[in-house]
Length: 258
Image 1 (spheres, rainbow, N blue to C red):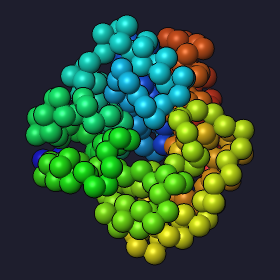
Image 2: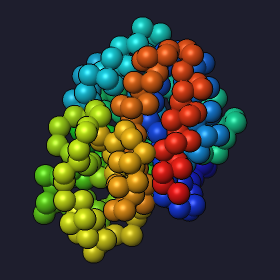
Image 3: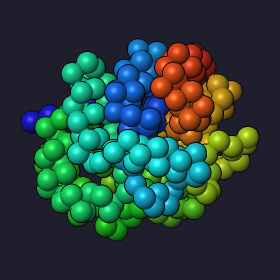
Image 4: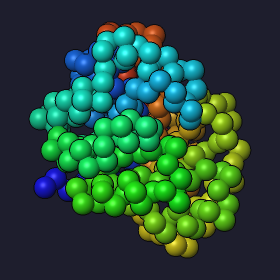
């Protein structure tokens, strides 16, 4: 059985985690973008499973979902992308999906397929801690980590979420949906102190990070940073020709973390 390698992403200094929407603009380009970003220094890849009602996502990622749907991307096609990527790299791969597609696919079938293609983890933004076990228990049997999110509003919930964490902890930097932000004002130092009191699982900060300066600032608090909308914007702008721009972007972000 395939066992999660997420911890490896955090073994070489601060981790850079890159998000792309699977199937945007097409199957072949998703695979190419991922492999080239890994070569450029990405330590872990999040692949977004297109969904019709992505409540945690802003307009940039919503538009990417529509482009992926236009190319005929389904959950099975996303698993095929993971399988193809896995032929070329052992970089940790995590799917970001909402609960509905996993539920509809069937928890057991979803995790079995994920394990078969070499998936390491799963992020489900609309899965609350109270209901995590119904997905997490199945995932655990297949060696897949269900990554928990900690929001700025979590407060007393932070300890409960952190103490149950596996893989890494996704710390949400700001209120609201995904998207580029000019400033991040959350008390991340306080959040991290609360997490560290109960867990030594690696932490990564996401939502709103787009510049090398922001990445460097956030890396003071966490073990890694997550960038989604800024990468998806590059793909939206350059389409199938985005590869060199993505490579340059990832290299600059990774340099800022060193």
